[in-house]
Length: 224
Image 1 (cartoon, rainbow, N blue to C red):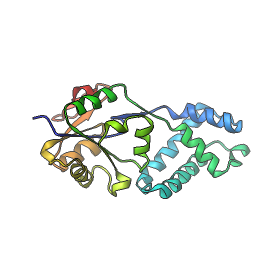
Image 2: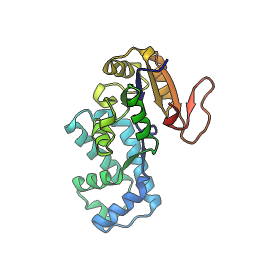
Image 3: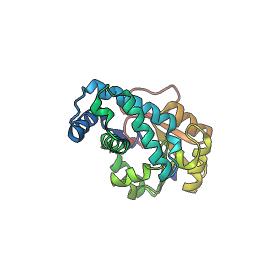
Image 4: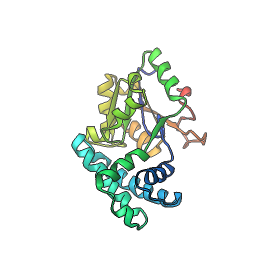
């Protein structure tokens, strides 16, 4: 039976993060004349991402998101090389530099897959461990018109793999668990979480690698 609703993870399923280190390198040079190596940029970005992942649910509204981004920029700064010119960069400018370096783009198969799902009459709900800026990101990438709703862990108050966030997504989609299918790239967050909520789950492995035994695995959303 064709599911009435598709629940979709964001990062790794709909969106990919462009390599941020070269962007950070370029932004620091352009804005402040600061030159760092790509390896140094990667180390700083890794520190920022680790901090963000630990605290992303704190970005529950616009004010809290601004504070979270400021703290992420501080984590980035702490991991950058010791340089007087870097130390002189004010917090707001560093936050703007960080945001300019973090860029997302949809995978090539995403738009056709979303269009096809809408033509089949399926409801489309994004369910992601993300701060509340995800909806704006999807709008910038012109994917928002193809999506019925966005549920973020920060906005809802629980992150995957909690079954609660999936149950909330079902309520938003106005379908029962048996009428939905969830697709995501994480065994722990997407597959285990969806199954705990009684939802059939599909693992997205874009490199074509096999998934765990008993888990339906696809390499492209066209296979949905």
